[in-house]
Amino acid sequence: MDPEKGFEQTIERDQRIEPRDWMPDRYRTTMVRQIAQHAHSEIIGMQPEGEWITRAPSLRRKAILLAKVQDEAGHGLYLYSAAETLGADRTDLTEKLIEGRQKYSSIFNYPTLSFADVGVIGWLVDGAAICNQVPLCRSSYGPYARAMIRICKEESFHQRQGYELLMTLMRGTDAQREMVQNAVDRWWWPSLMMFGPPDADSTHTAQSMAWKIKRHTNDELRQRFVDMTVPQAEALGVTLPDPDLRWNEERGHHDFGEIDWSELKRVISGDGPCNAERIATRRAAHEEGAWVRAAASAHAAKAKTREVA
Ligand code: BYC
Figure 1 (spheres, rainbow, N blue to C red):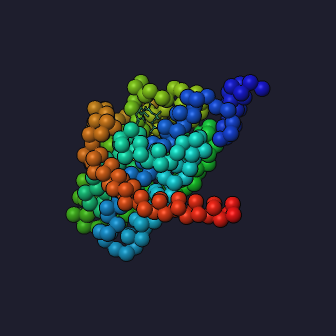
Figure 2: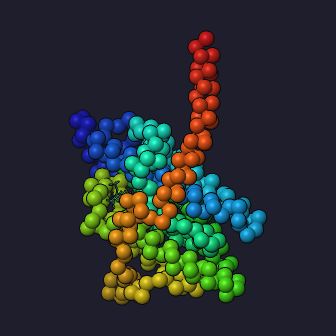
Figure 3: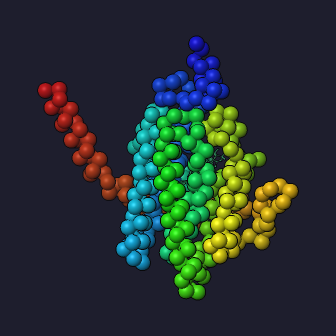
């Protein structure tokens, strides 16, 4: 069969494209772009919360946070492996990240000012990630879809730990409740921006939907997240910082206020509060790890020589 027809049929029948299948160059490029950005987000995403590991208020909180940050490293590794099945090279992807030639999620360019931020990241950021990522378990590229299944299970644990942390703080003192509200005020709008630009301005959505890489548009997922989060905020006893947020009976959804799209553009283009710091930290970690990579490849070369002999 004509390989292009085979590809189209696979997509049409909701089956998976696998690494050795023929695929259009643009499909491959799009997959590498999305998977690499996603992997970079997981790795850079270790930083904002990682900063609190040494300052966690108890051994229990420290153990939970350590586990969560390690999970994110794991997610990054599954995703880099998925990108490698498309012919990408992990070292090359890392270099593109630290040279600012590939993106990562805007959300990780905001500072974590208190331990309540750890809870709010779990609740809102991981909550948004789940909304965005559950449909990606049905994405048309097999290795990506399969990686997402495990990632989503772990993200659900992350979200629950965040919510539990916030419930504990909300049962605490006035100062602790204030800390939570302050963190919610700072993270709410950036969390909505995680879903990407509005559909009308999204460059890739139409093609990615046609290829069944994305199953919903950015605005659909953003709406789903708002609808899911409002009752959780009520149960928690916090206010979401949007005076226009209200239930719309006719639409069967919550209306919400206008997002500051200029802020998203600014943060994506490198001018967020922590962009420079995040990249500098990632670059330093990469450079400090050079000896490990050199030792590993020397060891691999030696093992190969022994095999040949
Ligand atoms: N931040 O045409 P669009 C996590 C870029 S990790 C930065 O709508 P697309 C977690 C977009 O890449 C969270 N850039 O694009 C980890 C494109 O740029 P290029 C990451 C953004 O791909 C640790 C341009 O804007 N999740 O969950 O159709 C702890 C136009 O956008 C953003 C994923 O990566 C943004 N917010 O849709 C806790 C999930 N939004 O490439 C949590 C997988 C847009 O043309 N990715 N851009 O230069 C996706 O689902 C999609 O790629 C997106 C964007 C919805 C993000």
